[in-house]
Length: 172
Image (cartoon, rainbow, N blue to C red; front, side, top):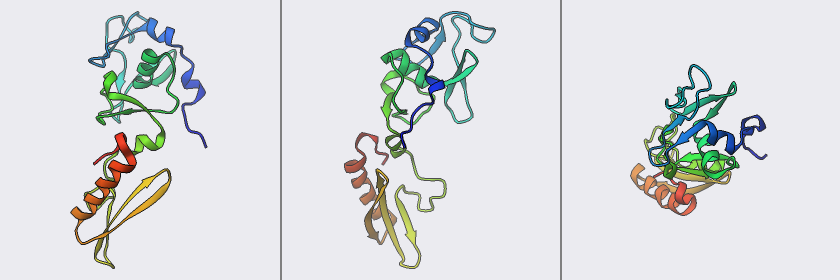
């Protein structure tokens, strides 16, 4: 199955986006170039912060994620899949902080899951064996990295594998 943006969310052209927004790639700030409504006033910041920390903007009665609008503004085309924030701050839309990513790549640089009890990404404790297990996923396949006497040892194995397997999208 190929994941990507819904067609309805790629209906704007780069020319139109450039005609209504000003974007500063260094600061990541986007302002309205023209007044479109009471909320979209020329010179004012564009968009709002959603409950997950992302900046969204309404254009022609549709809601768009600002980092996708910025990608269109800068490159002239919509991203094929997703846009990753390198520093993991979802509201930081500086151009140097944004990069195209597949869904799999975008998930690689997340921290530990909420149900993680070890405190380390990729590390699980197995009470029956009284051992810490390290593992990492790549392209839907889980790589078992071994069992260890301490969580720190297991995490060190995870970090080494993340550098090798996840490359620039690693989170260690």
